[in-house]
Length: 214
Image 1 (tube, rainbow, N blue to C red):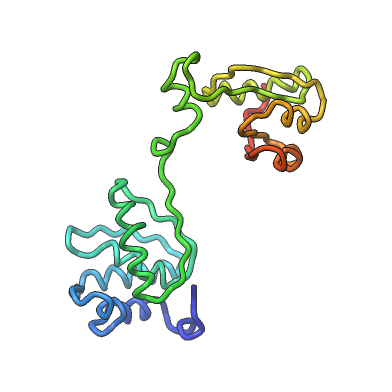
Image 2: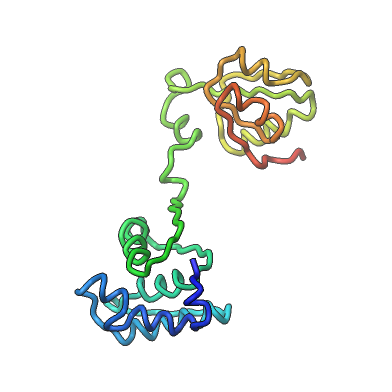
């Protein structure tokens, strides 16, 4: 994200240039007004980023807070997490403000949008929406572990509040051939080796961790 021309220029100065009356932001949007408070906030954010220090800032409506923290953040070239209080503001940043700023500043930035769990359809919510007899999917527990090692799998699924329609214990047998014959639609496992062997035959996802045995 950083360019060779910007390496020797302090971040606060880069931000000041971006917000200048003849800067890239003004050239990209003629409606952009010069706001002293916005520029002061941008400078404070830039200094905090460069000095790796904490900054607590508060500003009223109309100051331009969003651009004040996004511009120095984008210019810094560092990886960052931006948290918003509302989904509407999150969508505004991701769909409008960030793409517009990246274009105006000429920065190739990779963006990712993360929402809370309530915004996604997960297996638990899908099961809660239907009675067991009417659920559009069935969930089977297939484990190669023998007792008592299989307890961890059951404890994990119970902790996740996942309903199990069918349980199959292979007692140490290899899963791949069974999965191929079972013709499941999706397979999840916490062992990378199992995922690697199953993935050529079935859509596979890796679950990095579960619940430990007591």
